[in-house]
Length: 116
Image (tube, rainbow, N blue to C red; front, top):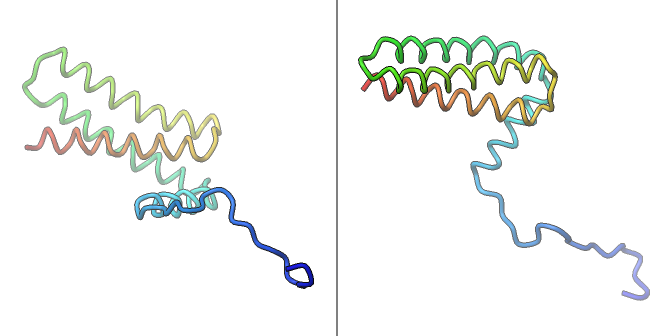
């Protein structure tokens, strides 16, 4: 290597770490969200608010105890409004995107739980 004209390459950091498929998908979607954040945030507010409204309607229409209704309704509302607030406050893209995922997943779980 003393007389070589090439630059030696070092592999630092994640030497033996392989990313799993779910992490790659998350990173791709996050990169896409960041690249066109204004448009995606607008669509996401509309979609996740509708999903949150549907889950709130199902919570209120089921015959469960008042405490369980209030707890579930509070959680759905908190997560839905949390994402909306994060977009309006122009928080970092990753935080807003994670709140969006959390809100959509939680609302979907509530909808599925109350339909069956």
